Length: 249
Image (cartoon, rainbow, N blue to C red; front, side, top):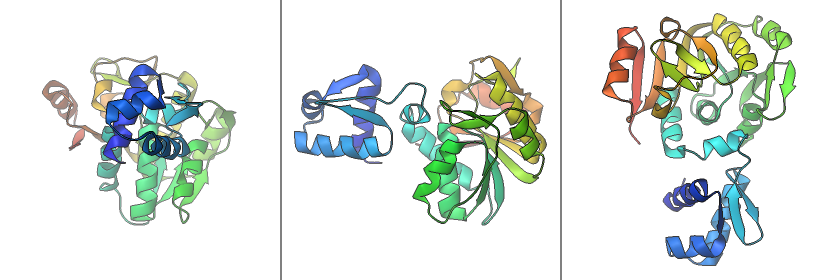
C-alpha cells in the first residue's frame, strides 16, 4: 500500500468523515490525485466515498477493522506465511489480519485454506488460483462467517497441522478472548482439528479482556504480533511455552 494511502486512512479513521478538499490540503496533493486514491481505497473496501467526501467503512465490517493498524496487520500476515510450507492445507478463522494472511498464504505458498469466513473466501478472488474450502452453517451477515452446530460438524471432517486465528484480547489470568461467544464455540472446535493454534494479532490487544474465552495460554503454540508488544507480555507468553514471532513495521 502506498504511503499516502496510509495517510488518508489514518486521517479518515481519526475524523470519520473528511472532504476531498481537506485531504488535498493536508497531503499537499491535487484533488484529482486524492479522488483517484479514494477510488482505489474504496475498491478495497477500506472506506466509503460520498459526494465530495470520504468516510470510514461500516464500523461492523471487516474492511473497517482492516483499515485500522493496516501496516502492522500486513506485516503480521507476511511474517505468518513463513510458518507454513508450500501447498500446505491450513485452517483460518475470520478477522482482518487473518484475511490478509490468507491472501499471502494463497499467493506465496499455494496453500489450501479451510475457513468458516465467507469474507476470506471472497477476499481471495485477488488470488485466482486459491483453493478454498468454506465450512457451512448459520450465516452471520455482519461478520460474514458461518457459526453454530453445523459449522462445528463440518469442521470435524478435517485435520490440519495449523489453525490461524485472531483474538480481541489477552491477559495472563483469562488467556485469549473474543467478543462473540457464538463464534468462540466454532473457534474452539476448529482448534480441536489442528495440531497447533497460531494467534495473529496486533500488540494493542495484550492487556485487554473481551467477553468470551477462547484459549488458555497453554492451548496456543505461537503468537505473531508487532514490535510494539511490551517486554512484560513477551516474557509472560514465553513463560507459558508460547513461541513469539515479532514483525518489524
